[in-house]
Image 1 (cartoon, one colour):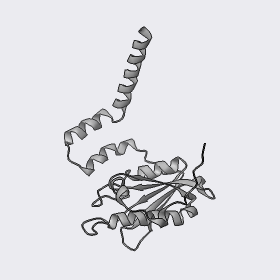
Image 2: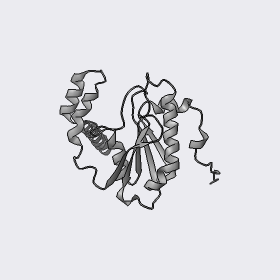
Image 3: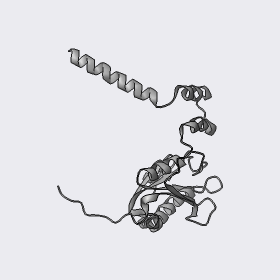
Image 4: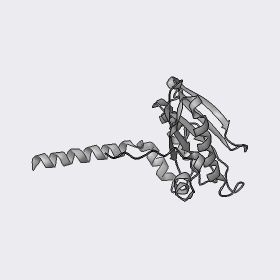
Amino acid sequence: MKTGLFAAVCGFAVLSTASMAQVPVNIAEKVRAAGQAMDPTIGQLYAPMFPKEGWAGVSIQRDIAYGSDALQRLDVFTPEQAKGKKLPVLLFVHGGGFTRGDKHGDFYPDNITLWAAKNGMVGVNIDYRLAPMDPWPAGVKDLASSIAWTKANIARYGGDPNSIVLFAIRPAPTTLPTTPPIPRCEAPRRPRSRA
């Protein structure tokens, strides 16, 4: 009985400490005070938490065209040790509901592709055309084009074209299930093994 109670108290202490450690108190208070509106400037509160010299050991190629439009650009974050390797690729799609957003900021969303490069992957961060200037399905087509570009070109950056993981913050997760398969973007089918 005492052992079970002790384990429960320890578990609660660990969980409460972990949940409180996610956002510093001073930032959490300012976020709450801002209310429920989506204010992009609120992200600046987190800037001091990111290292100023986080780019060391990572090569960044910016604004590589994957289409003819000015917004059809991507950045490639490559770890120094990528030469001649076939590293997994993390392709990041910024949020914004296909109406706003950008692949580059002071720390977000570069922090995601930087994290990938710092952890033995090649990070790809894309921009795409935005509505209302370019209505549906322009953004979805750009997503498919950026995947196709990545498959065709990532090997020269040390990435494995057959090991691409898509990491997206709205809109991509909601649109991918409704988007028909794009053959040029699919990896070769492998037979399933029976274990």
